[in-house]
Image (cartoon, rainbow, N blue to C red; front, side):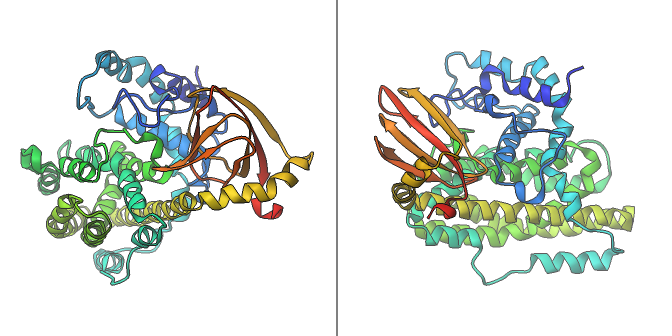
Length: 455
């Protein structure tokens, strides 16, 4: 019988998931790069630790998990393209889904298993302590959120703001799809109350008011493409994790009460989040359509009360205090996920802003690195338009060009053009890629560990 690691690799080797030859994904929404040739470090028997959320293994695993979850949803191209039906059939193929079923549970544990070790819900909880705890987590603050400070302090705030908007595309362009899974079945009047929240997300059947439609307009208003996964190569691991987290809870009904906790945390904090987003985007990106955020400022004030009173407290009143620890877990887990999201976003923007400095650092340390016979080095010779799809490394590396010309990408609209003798220091766990601009390009990648020791 195929083990989960083997099934994972067979899944990723599907032709739909091989490397793209363009930065922006064609064949949308089915094509996406899972880099099957680089899945070796992913061992589902050894789950990721708390601080591994930016590692290459996390990025690779979250990409696969996103793809698995999306096989449970219906995606059709905005504009049919030649061969789209073949891609549709391949994406939802029975054998491919069978492979996913063989590793899905292990993959979920691989990326989210650490949360159980991080979250302690062992104290005694009752209705009053639940309300007190929730209020302590959802009170408004006058402090600017860290993601807003990251955008504002960037050397290119407009680029940073667009990069931030791209990170929400995996979630917001199919918004509330995981929530839908909690509306199925039969659990009384609370089910109908939760459904009221869901139908708001879908615009009460008016497509122009559907929240994902509003987000499409936001993207288009700042010259971004609104098709699902057009920007697949720019998604950070934590952006995929934030979306996958809700699919994980929604897909496994043993997590129903955990989802309820995450729901109330989301709905009660989203108003302040959207107020900051509306203000910042209006300032940084004049002309940005912010209706997606202004709508949430209005509707999620109601949703927060509904999620608290009509879902969570109603569940506690009906089923007792024994479900409260699961709700607390959902609140704290969501908090963990979003802290990681903001942390990686800040680090990636700093990496994008620092490209010239890292180009200069290469000039400074390359002679010593290249003269040291003990540094692992890979000699590469690639041809025109050979694309190294978006990835990262767990240690600092030094890229040095010998012949030819390379486009080195470090994020949305962030690039260096490298010629003979040029190079760049690649910081660990920062997403990047490369494209060959000349007929061929010879270059070297040195694994230097920590760049600081060479300065």
